[in-house]
Image (cartoon, rainbow, N blue to C red; front, side):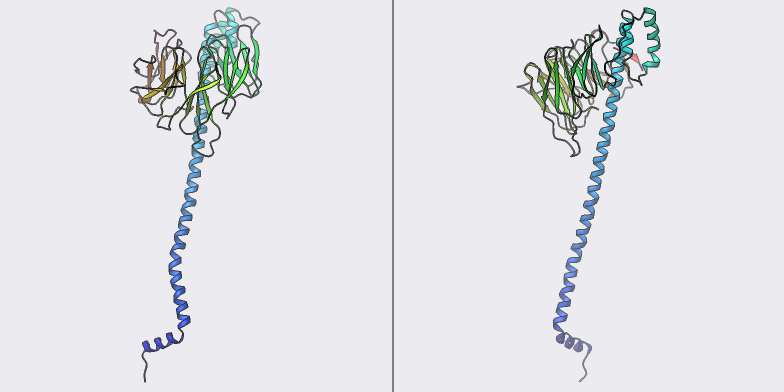
Length: 390
């Protein structure tokens, strides 16, 4: 009998059935497991790639935050330099020694050293500089502010904070705490507030009462590596109210402190929106009884009535404009200026008519906003507006 190849293969399979079955099962398992293993490896690789991208994004965010903070510090230094040279011009005729003392406070990189200091120094010498010119009590001041009445200079160093009486150069040590770069004063220099670096605590000083500490709540960070909150503050002219903004990556948290009660009486969280000031927060408190701060989106700012802030939400004021990155009050506190501003010399600087060069002027609750193209700052009188090109 002659067997076909098919018959021979069938006889071989029946004779070796156990081995054939085991081989078939092994092959089937390979066909089943191999695709799953491949996709598992692909998912692991994609997850690792996404983790690297997320880490790079966090590093980029941190670098942007550092660059933004540096730009803010530079702008604050320039603003202070302009205020200092304005004071020097004010006193060079009646008190040349005080004018020279003011000029000594300029930062090393201030343009005024070349543009204005030589002429002012010659004028001070011609008017007779006395021997009473004083030196700074701190070698490396990190922050300085001047009371609105021009009597006191507050300086924060690495180890302490001092108040200097500009009339007689008398120095009073306020605190031996290491202070940060945020320092604000009441109009008469009898109340001051400052913060230490990366702290959630406000240090509040009152003349004759010393320093008291007040902790404020900090909003959650946007990224895990953000652990250093940024705080901005504003004091009312009478030293009764302290407004603050705390920023940690997400929308800022604004608060109001009643200094007579030494307590936070109101808080408001802004969601992270399309607008963000270089410092994260910006605040203004008017002698007319309200505190203003920006909304998270363009075309709006918010304000609290100081006396009722603890029981009411902030009121929103809309305007035809873009994002707010700075708030300033006129000298009397009657007008609020919102936009990109330059301060220190009482002059308006006309800027190119770009959308982000808009200044909004608002006279408080119940008034309408006025919109200007350019940067706007009130002159020495609220009824006078001075313009200058540049």
